[in-house]
Image (tube, rainbow, N blue to C red; front, side, top):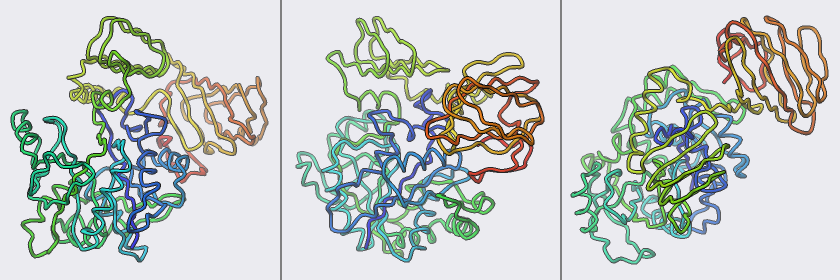
Length: 496
């Protein structure tokens, strides 16, 4: 039997705006170190020396909107040979795990699925590995194992797991496996304090371990509509490059539900299934980094309690998180504050108000403002573009194309484009012509002209694009050819 990591990477992380956006969510960000959160999750089982081997190739479940970014980050983390399951739209964690379990079973082995959200921090990997090893035996025997975080404060932002015996005073390296008695919703502060003092309630981590067949048996029995929709979606899907695409129409009928609500909370009542729920206590420096106050708590801080990233200057400031992605940020006389600077938005908030940032995001969406969805710098499979200026009938972009990459063969109905090469070499298709451009050379793409930009060189191609026209939206594109499996020859198709 093999231990198969399953990484659930479908969340949007709205409480970490403005760094986390709908199409660039928090798991793709580096918030607490050099690696992104997805990369940290992908390498979390490295060096595991437990009772079963770990598959070096993870199964990642993510939204198709950020499939190329996820694939690139997994490759950069050294995770090769894995599969990325693409959801056309989110349906919460239970369908995501069901799709991953079906993919694992299709490989012909009833693997142990280690289910890890992509947006968690785990600081003590030794204790984490020990907890995983303790869970393997019960999971092999048919139990569904979840991991309960040993609480260190009366937290009202997490759900809790009610376990059989108190863990107060127990050695963190010798925490015993517990029967799962009940799931408890997020409590008020007074109740959370009672849980902390009683020692029989652990934070619900969202981490799980079970055999693929056991999960599928439970879903088919407890959530049959979900099982049927996922089964149909897998059967109508296809493999596309690094990705496993599921059937969009079939998946649209899938109910949206979490692992806890769809299955785990129903196990005790479903005695006919014979699947016990088991909790392994975990004390390994865990955080779900759900909001900016959690990022501050998980970060290295100076003698004044400040965590600073980027170009910042602080005076008479304490217990604050300050992040600058570009400009100098100066803070004077702040206490318990969050200051986040990005090229197109700045957040200033009291630390105790960070759970309400989603209210700002909801307002941005209601007003159809782009700041909720994308950063100014937008990543594509061929590289990225940065919209550095715009006005009436014009827009200026900095475009970077990776070596050997190319944009689609395309045309626009409403805009013309001027291209100036700053670095590297460009091969340009312009109508019937193919021309080569070196540094400081330029060309013009008239409105309605079929064109393509390629980088045939060994270094990044960097260029400035000046667009002019009556409409400059990203949905003014018709594709004729594309190397990345994106929609083609469809007027109004966005450059995903």
